[in-house]
Length: 418
Image (cartoon, rainbow, N blue to C red; front, side, top):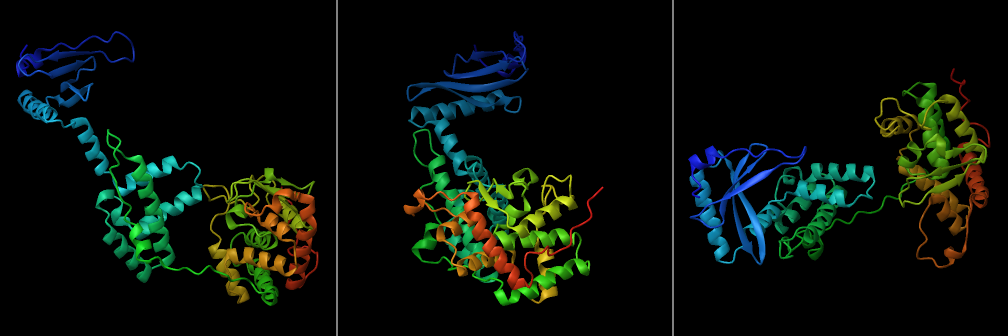
């Protein structure tokens, strides 16, 4: 048969024999071997070529009728069959072109899909840093991101904005490229992306050296800091002042990370055994800590304040159900106390206090949920919650002494909600 416009127009639509299954019928051209048209029970008509390529029968769709005319389809078929005759695989060529056009954003999404263990907060930070540092690169093909572009953008953002964010963005892009180099291949298994342009920063030693922050609230500043914390509720300086007071105190007296404290659920707090457990920690290990007397009072106060809440520190207007961003409250406490601090400074203050009291290194690591993988001895030491209760109480007593009180509730208990 000769595939012409009139022939294609007259083709009947095959009946659908089974629900949910598309039936199709193919017609082949007598003049151009391998050229054909396919009709489906859905009513679509599409031109194709069918040819053995490297010993495998492959069918390549040229386009749907009438978006592509019969004459155009025949010409495209002749062109494609000609490539095959010279040893070119159009399927592999098309796949390679598709891979070569993959953008930074597409590769990033594939990277996230493959890295299912990443924490939601980490993913959010990754998304944010790309939009901060390379917003105009998101739709740029990976192959168009050169070593020179990497060096220039890293330098620009580091000099004009943040060196730490410039480093983070380029480390993320390096990870995306490493992923892409192993993920995207041609049909023959050949890598499409052959080099990682971010390697230039290491070669030229252009990475910014970021000094690790070491600030703490000094012991002689704790009394003033605490007075500022008290004034947070006395002056009604911020909404939910008592909640923010207890949040900051919990971190100071436990060394928790800000997100660990903010997302703590009541189902993981055991008031009978005076302990609480963190499930979603940075190192993925669950982490159970004892409550000192002061901490027990704090948890009782929180329970009385929100008896029906799922979270210890709930937030009605938060999509997560708990508080997220403490910056506003933190700045207000700093203003009222004249003591500058960050939430992580509270954790460092807990650590330095523990170290100053000569708390066992193993107990300290256990309190902070730090890994001890390289310490062979630690593998033979089992530190349970009760063994941590004494060092936790010692740290609490010392901090209470520094802020000017001793084992008494810092903030009066709230009236139980009706």
